[in-house]
Structures are given as structure tokens and as C-alpha cells.
Amino acid sequence: MIGPSCRRLVLPWALLAATAASPHQSPSPQPARPVDAVDAVIEACRTHVLVALGEGAHGNEQGHAFRLRLVRDRRFAEVVDDVVVEFGNAKYQDLMDRFVRGDAVEETALSRVWQDTTQPQPAWDAPIYEEFFRAIRDTNVSHRGGRQLRVVLGDPPIDWDAVRTVEDLRQWDGRGRHAAAVIRREVIERSRRALIVYGDGHLFRVPVGETVVSLLEQSGTRVFTIASPISSPAAARLETLQGDVRTWQAPALVVLRGTTLGSAEFAFYYPAPKVIRDGVVVSAPIPERWRSLSLQDQFDALLYLGPPEDITFAQLPRAFCADKSYMDKRVSRMLMAALPAQIERLKVYCAGAERQ
Image (cartoon, rainbow, N blue to C red; front, side, top):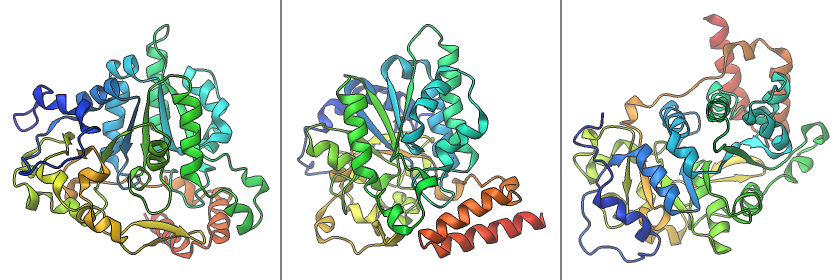
């Protein structure tokens, strides 16, 4: 049931078709109007070949629950052909194709899809990422004979068996370029429609470096982009821009153009851009060109997942801490990538798991 603070898609959703073509900010921003997020994303997919949905902070369970609702909605598979994900190694695309069709796939082989991406740290080892793949498989099986969803694995096809040095690892930089090329080949050139699920930083139109969206739009394909800025301090302060935000029923989506939330400074939502230098994720200075940007310059819509105190994060299964082969793999890869803080974080987590 949608409460009165989260409206059904009526008049406001006419903005979807006009958003990408309306570069001018309203002289008097209006309050953002929340609508049901599942309805909204499905409608966006009807009107745009590519819709990019920010994950927000990796591992957040509210975003994951929303994505499960979305792909399980029968209308989604009637509109969308492909779901392009950050959390899957393209080396295993054939394996994933068989899996989501409903074929039998060996469990150990399947886990390499998300455990063996270019990310040395356990970014995707929490159970929610496997659960997302299984939800699409279950949806396809239940729709047997109807339209089927395909999962497109967007991470470069790294072969960790051939990685011996940090120089070997650096050959797999350029994740944005690879993903953009895959989307052009597997989606655009085949006249298909896709939902792209990536971290928000990969979806900036005016990036630090190259992003999936900036590369796609430079080549002529407009992307409808949805921010999920729950990992920033701004998530706790949206009500300072619009007082009724805390009354919204999550998950809700708002179109940003001409609204109080959309007109706010981009740096308010994303104050410290992240870049990778020598294999380490660091905060970069705010680029001068960002200082004049509003959120609506970077994104078309915002997904509201609830107040910050309600956001929870999936954890690594405790059994992994006792799995020597798994721990050796993760620690050795992070050592190679010079990620000492992540190694310490994993060890602290596992020490706590042992005590419980």
C-alpha cells in the first residue's frame, strides 16, 4: 500500500521523457514529489534504452531489497532485456547465461563470478549479490516460455591465476571503459534495453576520470541516471533541503529537475570523490568544475531508501573466516594491491566472528 506521502505515477512522470532534454533550471525550485520507486524505474525503462541505478554504499540491504522487488515484478521483464552489474567478472559470462536460464551450474564455479572480479577486497562476497543473481534465475524459471532477463557481467574478465604482480593487476584498470564497451556491444548494438546497477561514482555525468555514464553519453547514448547517495553525510540532511523528506515512505523515487533536492549543490551529496591511485581508493580534491554543479546536472532522479539510521549492511558469512583457502586468497590479493586498511578491517571482523 502506497501512503499519501508517496504518490502514484500520474502527472509528474511526464517529466521522465523531458528530463534529459531540459537543461535549464527552474527559476523557483519546487518541492520534490516522491513516487513509488518500483513503478518509477519500470516507467523509466519504458522511455529510455538505458537506466542506470546507483547502488549507494556497497552492501546496503535496503538497496538490495529494492532491487529484488524490482526484478521480481512481472512488468520488469516485459520491458527490460538485460541487467548489467558491476559485481560480476565478464570472464564467466557464458556460465552466468546458463545459470539464469535455469541450467544446473556447479556452485564453486558460480561463486567465481562475484569472488573473482578485479576488486581484491571482499566487495561482493556478502550473500546479497549471489541472492540477486538467484532472484533473476528464479524469475526466468517462473516465466518459462515468456521473456527472459539476461545478466550482463560488467567487470573486466580478469584471470587471477595469471596475476602475479601489481603490474599484472594494473593491466585490468579501466573498469568504466570496459563496462561502456560491453553495454554498447551487448545492449545498444542489439537494440535491447538494460538496467545498469553500479556504484554511484560510476554514474556521474561530469566525472573525475572516466565513468560508465560519461563514456556512453560521449558516444551518443543518453542514460537515465538514478542517485542513491546514502553513503554521504548529505543522507542525514535531506530534510534541511525539504522538510517533509522524513515523512516519505521508502523506497521512493523523485525526479530531480527543477526541485529543491535537484537544485542543491552536487558537492552537498557527494563531497569527496573517490579515485584509485596505485591500487588504493582515496579521496580526491573536489574538482573546480564540480563546485558549480547541482545534483540535477549529474543525475536525473534520486532513490530514497529511508533515513540513515535505518540503513543496514550485509556482512561476510562467518564461515568464510574459518576457510583458510578463502582467507589466503583475499589477503594475498589485497597485499598485491597495497590495501593494508582493508586487510586489517577483514582481520578485525573475523576476530570478532571467532569470539561469537
